[in-house]
Length: 364
Image (cartoon, rainbow, N blue to C red):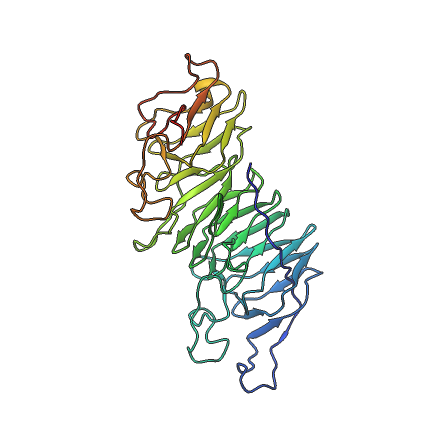
């Protein structure tokens, strides 16, 4: 399993009213609260307030930050991130009419002109770093918006990072205008759940105008409730990038974008099943192999209606997943194949819905 390491920059919070003697700073208001210290006891951030994170070392340390619906949290510069420590967690339950918004300090559309420059600056992807749940359990984000995040020294980075076995719920959230992307063989999603617990819930979310929307650990169930475009605006790498092996019964039914097997080898363990929904497409990077350790029974609905296994370069099936427009075209031997233990003489499946693979590619 491939891994990528991030520089984790902390984040915390004891709020006080924003004050300044510098006339260039924005005016003080009772609704703008600057955050400069860690949260070390149960804390509530209240609705109709703008909380400005103005520290490069902000952590929620073994406690709970609860955020009310309608709250706006802005990150002042691209070095600002939030890290959960120990048993810390964030409970952020917005509503459809009062979402909780995590965004750039330059974002005047949410929470007003907090930086007081009259629109002279505009927000952009990578204006702030990320929220890293860092192996914690129990964080909940419902009806939240994550905007303009994902900075890491000009490298692709997540906006919400479920690292180190994090177990969390992300439901009815919007991820837009974030970075993520590809760094060599590694893929980083705006919502990055590559190392998350298989109990993590990712449902009913909207991803659009991100460089790369979503990465997951292979054992996370993904249903057909998430959307990967809004008003015909999608994402550059418009797919769900998957890493790791499957050793529990797992279901993938999303059929609006492809699942991309980004590991060289993905195993479905003995006696375990991956169930695919109809019209699900799996795409494979160069040299990738899917190993079915219990034979065809490991892959439920393997020949279902509209199910395909194809190259990452195949834009005809569920769009441009590798983010290069028409610069690359699929070809034979783009990936290795689906290996079935003790199946026929070759061990590789030759189903009609497998495209552009070759278990014995010519020497390059």
